[in-house]
Image 1 (cartoon, rainbow, N blue to C red):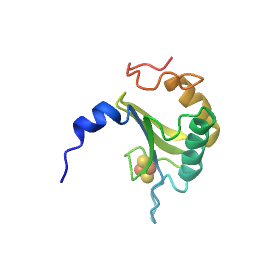
Image 2 (image 1 turned 120 degrees about the horizontal axis):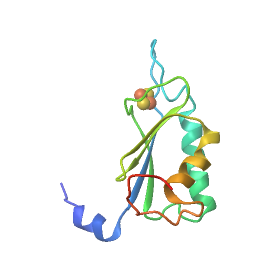
Image 3 (image 1 turned 90 degrees about the horizontal axis):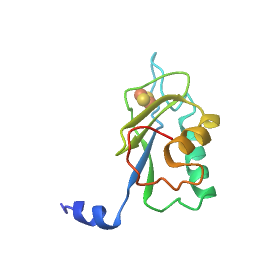
Length: 115
Ligand code: FES
């Protein structure tokens, strides 16, 4: 095991966008069926359009965030502690602009309320 905390703090990520893409069989809703993969694609596209994909923001598909809904995917943005459910691909530009600014200039700005 390597402790990379200092390395990441100095040179690594300031923001993480976690998009649930969990698939499951059964009676309960899951983000894969609610468009999670398309939401993930919309997030990466929005960041690419602003030239900040593969920068200090890291996007990851994640397993269940505990906000399961048939109405859309769950998204968490850390370390700012923001949680969304029922996210559809069409919601992503507004969501990310509210968090990071229209031009993604607020990456690493960790206040609790989106602008
Ligand atoms: S399956 Fe996505 S939040 Fe539970």
